[in-house]
Length: 452
Length: 91
Image (cartoon, rainbow over all chains, first blue to last red):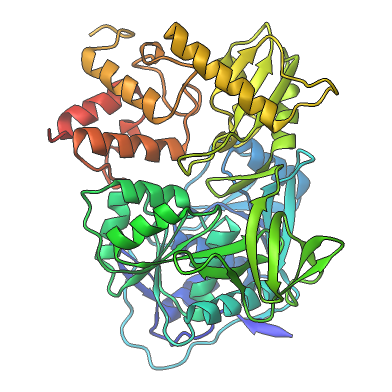
């Protein structure tokens, strides 16, 4: 079985736009063919493109050439080099050469001045991709210390995008998409690349970062946009009270739970409906809800939740094996559930998933550290940050952070990181999260008293 | 101005950074004006850039933008960030 590379697009449909202009479907397919012809004869391409259009062309060229996109969570040199070591038959696709990579780099060389081709009448030839072809491998940090590889068949990506399109109504009308999330992340890949390829939603080629960037891009789009973002960005947008938001129809948030307060304020100031997507690395996005309307998540049509041995499982026919929930959920019926809590080891910070056990291990392995504990404190301002206690008489907090930065993504660097004489083990030799939280309160008090 | 002494306005911005980011293990006076804020120096990341941007817009009344041609250097050190704020603040 095969699925076409693109769906729901006419020859002159807009695929992407930026400040320089637009790119239509026909031009996109030309760009894909041209790049595919230049790709080295290798199996894997580490797709590091930051511009969303360049990423999309590279992504498509790689699968047209029956190769696999490798999507690292971070651009840190060590992480890329580690992937290259595991996948020896690989190369990198980049817009600009990256320093210190021990691996062949191919530059996209796609002209950044996107142009509008004159009206085209002939329907272009759309490449057909084998359903079972591994289109991408997305990496997340695993609890063993090595990044975990999650293979995505072209079939699973296409069906996932079709399910989302049905849930959000893109089938009736394609929407313009502006995303603040990187395309290398599964959420970003689905919403800003696959919604375009499979549902015909034009996507903004850049990645606006500050609230004012987001406002400008949305305000100048040729139609009302869907803003794909995260709680971190929404909080920043909510705080930018002097900004006048226009031309946003819907906000989609994912990667972490969005508080009702943030959703309420976003709807009020940005004049848009706030929806959330729920997903996991194994399945991709699988459910959505309108944050202010309901606590209940609706699974996409075709996906079911069921209970086995007191664990909630997800059955998604396009993914293969059923997957156990990482979170504690209440099953309402086979298509609906509520989230009750998060699994305590896995944390999600700025869209990056990490294991506390893994981060603790990495910290303990640093030369000069005798013992260490990492935990997620109660979070009262929507931004989750890990906190750590480290037992060492050779290093200061900044040296520890610097050493850890070489091993893990910087969003997981605990802050604050306190150097302590002893960790608060209980009588049975355990370190509970509660004990760590109590311990941290002491520190705050001490600091306040000494006016450090 | 000498290399490692904070000016008064730099100290003010340093205090804003420490407060915005909850840097409990460092004091404002300890931030070296010429030391990189991100990666090697304070080891800040992109969430921090957003947090600092929020604090700046609230205190100094202007919004940071990525398409500022000087953007890469604005955040490189406390000194650069302070100069950018001095140039752009509205009140």
